[in-house]
View (cartoon, rainbow, N blue to C red):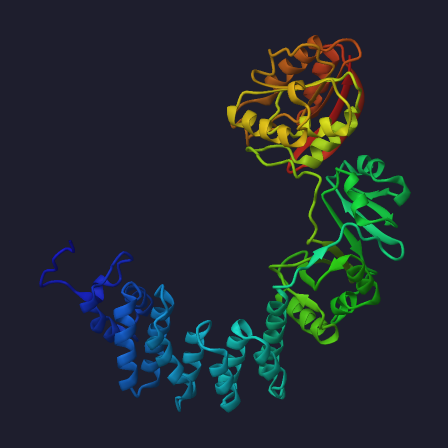
Length: 526
């Protein structure tokens, strides 16, 4: 039951409270408050009773001759029409009538209120009759968001002498072209090979570039060219690159250009870009522009408009894109890389479950590659998390058994799901246990493979050094002669000393980038 109001109740004061919900009898009083300092609060209150507010505002709108008041009432009517689950045809009709109002300001307000609800034909009629440039721009914007083929034709036919209208027209056409293709399938074909050799860049974590260069099919001439960066020459189907499991992103670099007006549009409409798009895209070519180093909205819009004028088949669509144009400007040069985003990555499809601070699968794959595969390997991951190291080791090559342990039951549940998906035929050769890495001793272990908890995300406030020193000593006792320990450590000096004390011999060491932590892949043999 609503709280009874006393004689001291003040609607103007009550409306300022964020939680105020008016009754229908308050609507006339709220409408009278419009135009004051509390307009936002008054509008919020009115739209909590949208049916009553919409009807009352429509009636008041028909009777007012004041431009400013009419604009405010139109905002109420439009807001009420949007707020009602079932669109109120009478409210939409009232707004539509205002498209013929003699006052340009009122017509513009009606156009804004009708976005998404007015019939395309009615907006086109209004555009054909409109002579006021700001109202023309409002109509073009509305049609760009909701129109179809007729809107595209009408907007293309508009004269563009007025500079602002020309810009709005270009943006609307970009939106309409984008929307027109969204029902058409667009994807990257992994089975497609380029007609000519293409330079491709593969990015990975800094420190893993040499592992990645060894992993990529050597027929594609892979070579590490910088931290986290491998270049190759693609002469085979794109899917061949998925045999390498340690890259994070791939892209096709275009020839760099001197930075300046038109440089980005030149790059994306070049013959070089056309060959890449045509080789791998099936369906419309949809692209987005990702400019490194901050927001560049004006430059991105200008480039998209120029591209649409030169290559109408290229559709700028940031939401449903098949290609990302990664742009970097440095030392006066523009570097553009075409990254296939409409690309299904089959490598880690098994990963159905995750936990806090779980391994990234490309890092797990790198660890498996450093460890190598022996058919008699009995593998233990003492900090198994969601099980990705065990999954990647099992996929890398033959093994005898896979053991995983963790102190978190949720992590073990995630690992169980991922391992079942990755290695469905392994059966009894996989066993998971809730256990402490410093004491657990699975039978016959020959390889310990792990990416342990690296800090505050998992062990807030707990020192890592004692945990890792105790674990390394236990691992050395557990492993047989020739047994291996391959893992990532955030405390290389500490763990290196602990391993040496325990009688392990280092066979590999590689610093890798793991966020803000200084970490290393270490490989040891007993």
